[in-house]
Image (cartoon, rainbow, N blue to C red; front, side, top):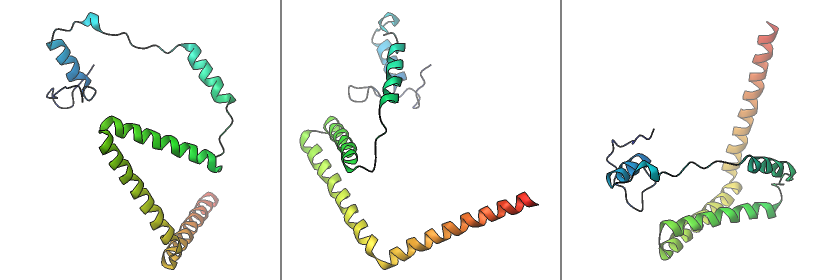
Length: 149
């Protein structure tokens, strides 16, 4: 059962036709579509599921400490982001937005590099770590006391 979250007031167009399935179906019926035009739902073949499970077992675990694997993963994320920008905006706007994203990431890296060297920041981090360790120790002590009572 398809239900519209906006009380059936969605405006369906080519750009947003996937936003509200209920209103899209209502518009199709309004323009004369009949139920015999429905596509059957896709069925996943059992062979596909079995082969995917075998592939998952046979694949070695990726070593995420290897910089080459990390760069491959980052490259995939960059490709996905770029394709989305091309889909969403024109080429010129996509370039501007992608460069803006790169500038922000570079700025964050520079800021983190400076933050790691600040004595005050390092002392704050050490203090937080000590407090966390102390809290865990006290929690363990409380648990031991409760068991012995």
